[in-house]
Image 1 (cartoon, one colour):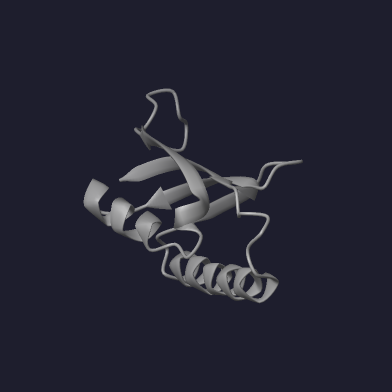
Image 2 (cartoon, rainbow, N blue to C red; image 1 turned 45 degrees about the horizontal axis):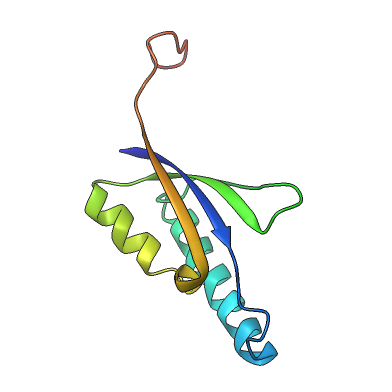
Length: 94
C-alpha cells in the first residue's frame, strides 16, 4: 500500500540543544533504515519549511501508524496522510 505523507516539524525552541541534536540524529538513523528496508522509498524536503513530503510503501494502515509513531520527532510533528491508488492513465502501471 502506498501513502503520501506530509510531515511538518515544530521542535520547541527552548529544547535543550544537546537533546535536540540527539533526537535529530536518532530520527535520521531511523528514517534511513526504513529507506534501506524499502518502506520509505521517497522523501523530499519542502523548500523554505522544516517539512517533507514522503512516499511510504507498507503492508497496512497499522504498519504505517507504527512507523510514523516510532519517529523520534513524532511528538513535534503535524502529519497528514493520503492513501494512494494506481491511476488508470499511468503508462508505467500497465
